[in-house]
Length: 402
Image 1 (cartoon, rainbow, N blue to C red):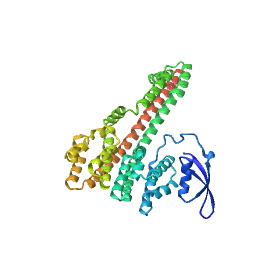
Image 2: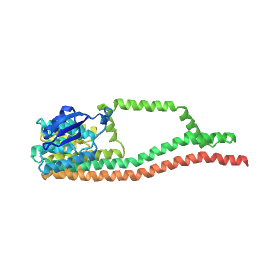
Image 3: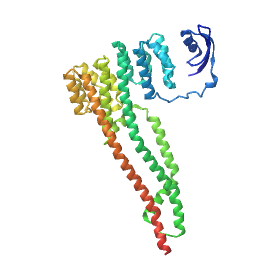
Image 4: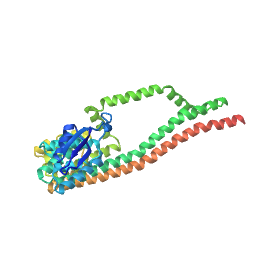
C-alpha cells in the first residue's frame, strides 16, 4: 500500500507533517479531514516506495492476530465504539498484511457494514471460526465476551501448532545434517582415499567398494537425480491445489501408524472446541456444526462429517450422527452423549477438547523421545560405515608394506 506525506493544520493553527498509508490520495485526505484536520497538501512518499508485491505470500502471524484481538477487546470493554477502536489500532499494527486488511475493514464499517460483514471477505486470512464469533457477538449483544472466548480458543490452537512445529524441527534438523554429512563423505572424502589406495595397489574391502561404487554412481547420474527432483517439485506445484489431490493426501495421513492418530485426535479436539465456542456465543447447533466442520484441518475428516447438519435437522442426536462418521473415538462419543442427556453439551465439548489435547501432547512427547535416539543411531551407523570404509583399506596397506 502506498505511503503519503500529509501536511495539515490543527484547529489551534499548528502545522503538522505525517506519513500515512492509504489505498489512494483521496482516502488519505478523507481520513485526516474526518479527524478534524485541515489538509494543506498531500503527496506520495517516493522514498518509502518498494518493489511491487513485496508482501506477496506473507501471512498474518498468530501472535499479531492475538495481540490485535486482545487490544480490540480491551477498547470495546472500555466503551470505545467499534469504528474508533479500529482506527486507534491501525496506528499500532505493524504487520503490513493485517494493516491493509484493517484499512479495508475500517472503510466498510464507515459505509455502514457490520463488523462481521466487513471481515467476511478475509475468511481465509482469519478463519471461519473468527467470522462466526463476530456474528455471535453481534447477535448476542456481547461482542467483548465472545471475542475473549475466541482469544482463549485461538491461543490454545496456536500453542498446539507451535508444539507440533517444535517437535518436528529437531528431528528434521538431524535428518538434514545426516544427508549433508553423507554427501560430503561420498563426494569429497572417499574419492581422495580411493586414489590413495590405488597407488598402493591394495585390494579394497567389500564395504569400501560398495560405498565407492555408490558414490561414483550418484556423481555420474547426478543430473538425472536433479531432473527427477525438479520434475517432482513441478508436478507438486501444479497439482497441490487440486481438491482431489488434497483429499487423497489427507486420507493417507490418517493411515500412518503413528501420525494418523495425531491427525485424528487433533481434528476431534478442534471440532469439539470450535463447536463449544459457537454454542456458548448463542449460535444454534445446526449452523454451529457447519462452522465447526470447516475448522477441522483434515479434508477427509470434513467429508465424513458432511451429513451432520442434515441428520440433526432430521431429528437425530449429535452422538448418533457422529457415530456414523466412523471416525470419532468411543470416548469422545460417550462424553458427548453425556453432555446431550445432561443438557450440558457446551461444557462436555470443552472436556472432550481438553482430553484429546492432552493425549495429543503426550503423543507428540512420545514421538520426540523415540525419534531422537532413532536418528542418532541412524547417524551413528552411517558414520561407522564410513569409518570402516576408510580405515579397513589402511590396515590392508599396512599388511602389504610389512
